[in-house]
Image 1: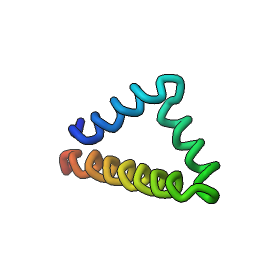
Image 2: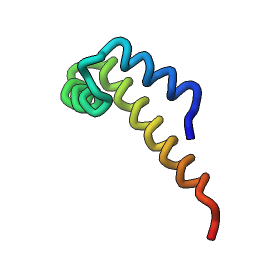
Image 3: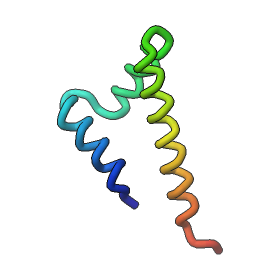
Image 4: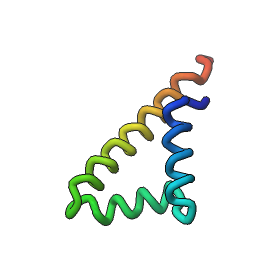
Length: 64
């Protein structure tokens, strides 16, 4: 299941940081979030989006 906003974020990440994967970005944010307020906010937002996406994927499975 794809969402327009998620696709847009992934496209921007891929365009801006072609040498960095999403996992590399997450690792960088983890190492910088205590010393950089922006990195902390981006990490929190990215983590929230990841949990929301997983919940939507789980909710979309048919009930057995």
